[in-house]
Length: 97
Image (cartoon, rainbow, N blue to C red; front, side):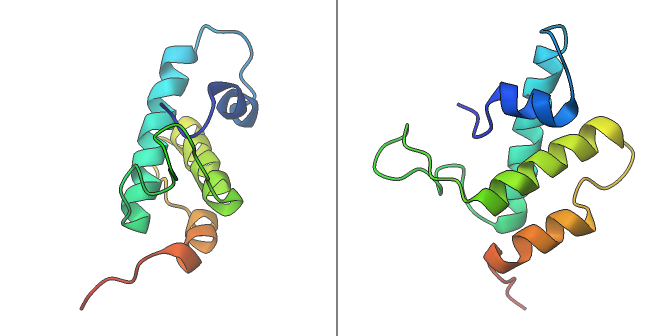
């Protein structure tokens, strides 16, 4: 189950209709994976109590949406933009040296 609903992602991408739904779902999955990997957390990290109760901080949601947009609009560039780093840095588990 995606953390970001498809209608929210499509709104971010300004996509109407359902012709691109499969592509949007792939971008949602990729963006969520990229952000969770950057934060060094598992996909279940933001689920509390049960696998269906998601508590996603707004800054993490915003970062996922920005990564989706970056993947959609600028596929040849790094999806972890400065804006994404700025949003996520405070929640990132520091790397061990």
